[in-house]
Length: 387
Image (cartoon, rainbow, N blue to C red):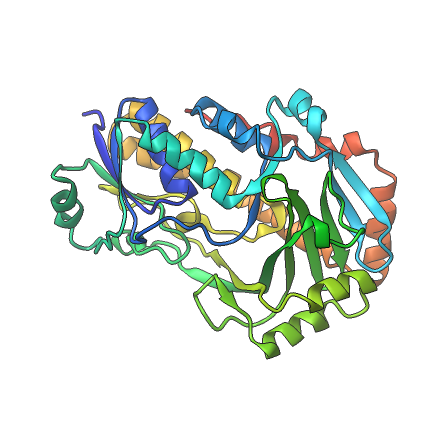
């Protein structure tokens, strides 16, 4: 029997994309979000071609193009000497090579574009301020007045929907902290590049910076080792935590150190990743995005994987019986997620290298032309989701 309706738990990027992707196939959805209003935590995100291609198919990309930035390149730069180690071209090159643009934007910008599309679609209904006890399967039905063929858990790392999936993965603290903040362009040091994504590299830590054009600001994420004390990803770190962060950047360029020292209100984000486990319960509930496979951000693919998940799951549900679609989704998506985890782990090793390994890294990268480095990304950015 074909799927006619779905309950989606969570109105983040994964949940909103899932609703639009389902609607594309004529499947109705109700999205349940416990927040009274959608105020996306965090700051910026990178939308690579594998994700922007899907957003274009769903009619969302046109809302982003006038406001986001398409960086000229992704640069790898020494955090101490500020010498560029390597770069991967983006801009028009990305559209020509991977068939869709690469952009940077504030998370709220993407979320608003998705929300506007959901609000305009008669097959999508959003319920805010609804704290769902997923163990009570009648609860979503009672709110919407309908019955659902399946529940899609798109409620992030601390998913409550996972309770419905036996042997589901569990969150594991990675040992790393992301410090997130923005800096107005007018107050930014000259070392920050206004046209590109820049990853400053150093031993055991790194810093990623890129412009958010619509906010006239730079999005900055500084990643260091640390301990987790909270599940609140919008918390402001205390003095001891900030001191630990600064120690992680000891020996870096003075301009970067001054920039970090000035950020007393930076958000303290412990980074969690999901362990091994099942993504569906074999009957009526399935997990997507971070709820299924949260990973480290070293490949900048968290949002993209949520978008891919939603789009491909919808396509499978539209063409196959429910359980067959569930099994196919997990078997199809799991190898790609595993490969991206490996890539993220490799990037972490390379970004945080020290001593002779760092010197070897810099030498190898300096000998490779930008187009060769871009070819390494073909399997990520050139991926065409099935939907």
